[in-house]
Length: 253
Figure 1 (cartoon, rainbow, N blue to C red):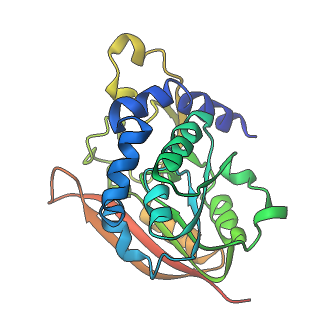
Figure 2: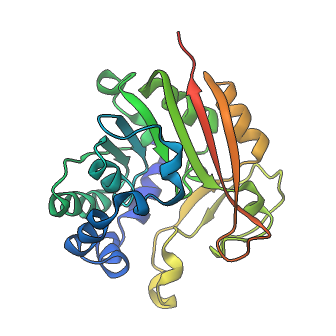
């Protein structure tokens, strides 16, 4: 495992289970909400799936199962890949309460076991801002290509690169030159929800943020056909870009 992955693992296991209970409810409470309307819980991402029933989905950096469990409730066969044991605990307890099967692999995504998962999935799906955790986007896209079946779909939703120059999502992340290739140390995603005394103790992460061009080129240069690139407004300011969703198909071999 890369040094920066070890650093990310420490950050994402710091108080993580307790954090999810405070912000998402107990696993039983979260399961009740997921079960009531799983498609609603997927939000805008639901429209990017052709179908759910029987589809094998890899949920990349799927965290606490916030999207994986609704997908499973809709009939998908979902495997989460994530670096945090604490995230796995919350996700698996929620899945049990929701009475669905969820598979969960705790690993560095760049080290997925290809003896087990080569061309294993119909869809790879990621959301919530994960690309900046990987310092080589081409290496990341190569892994996505490796675990997808030929003709399979990648749904990659992430923070819009515009957020490099303006914090339009109000995530309290530093801004920089749009074209910066710097790897920098910064707070993990949930640090801003803690009081300052605890916030200072939370392990940091090391990030690399990308431009639109870098993301698109990494997709098309690593065995994918880009089908859509949708831009979404920021959560609190509809005049500014906040997220994007790229949809790509793995080329037939």
